[in-house]
Length: 139
Ligand code: IDP
Image (cartoon, rainbow, N blue to C red; front, side):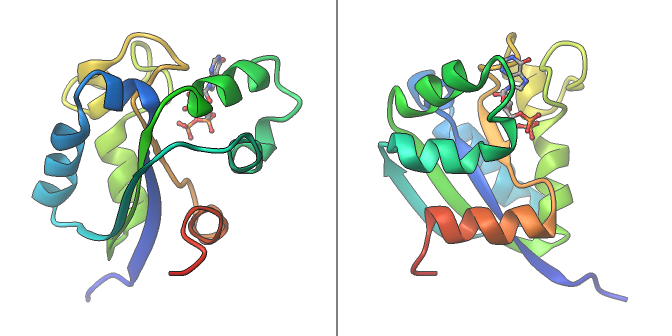
């Protein structure tokens, strides 16, 4: 039985772009077998960053997170494939790159701090629909 095709919103965050991991992250997505549906290198407005991370608005790190995401260019992608949402979360590893992300994952291999964890991936079908609409309204 084949799994339903899904789409997920992926961000290579400004730390990942600044450190030169765009190619590495895209290569891992492609090697997993996921397709690239959209991709754009861009600066993010404060409005989009706040909307993207709205669920964290009450958290103490929210302001710093918005500053970080808007502080330099990032690469936004829409990826597609069977169980694409969970598949990319597996490639990324847990949020804390030291205590949660296993070696072999993007965060486990390349990051040290929770905020500067290289990538974002949608965490559910609902989040993916909302985030793809926010970042790629014409898709
Ligand atoms: P996720 O990116 O693994 O889905 P979330 O809990 O949704 O994790 O957090 C969103 C992003 O906010 C994280 O990827 C990370 O960049 C940042 N973040 C989460 N928790 C903290 C924290 O305690 N301090 C600083 N930044 C955080």
